[in-house]
Length: 271
Image (cartoon, rainbow, N blue to C red; front, side, top):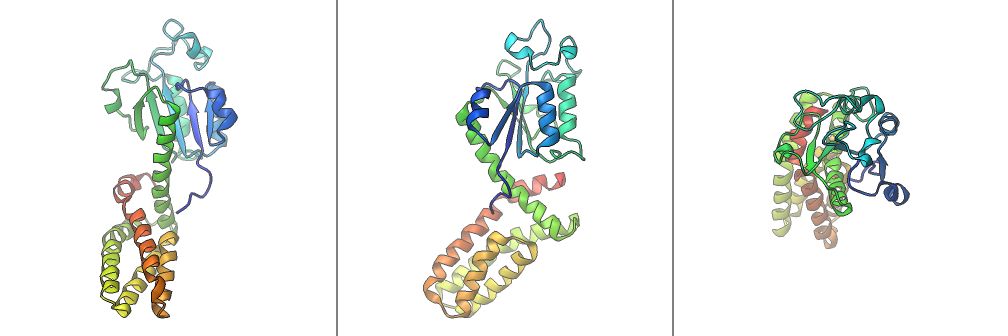
């Protein structure tokens, strides 16, 4: 299922990558180091992923010169937020609150914290609830590309949640029931279709395909419905020469959906 729009990443703070070169040659990445710039971006652009830098400290005494521009002058002498194992500062908490504002356009956007490698080695295991993950820097361009590819795949899975919620008019209980039935029934139906085709039981294969097609059509899973439609049409018109190719596509599209089962169910509560 293709993404509805380009996958856009906001990279904040002093993540160890050349920001200016990214802004010049990467249209999918917006890099910002100034507080006001970050605030402007999160209030005017819907991102698919936000990388949030968590410096060790933000005081004039301990912050290297290359990092000080990321701290608003009026915040430079403020202490770390009490109880924060990641050294988060009030201005950072404010940005996170703006991002996660339920009325904001980035309230559902995954936020990844990037921490300094000199911090407590346990930091990556202490992921605050406002972050979707926490990683230790530096983030090389290769690692960044891998991270983007990973979250592109997850974005596809999150799209399934939005599609089913739309179909059920935000009936969460019904949506969850539909997901559970799809994850249980679709793989079994694909196996039954395969067995029927191998045994040349084409009428049985068509009946099962028709049932599968109805389920995915009702749920709005167009990426599975397309090959299911084609396979059902071939079986209905005795066009057996191409059924193997269309079945393989149906099998792969179904797998592309069911492989996200754990991620979808774990993240369903966010929607």
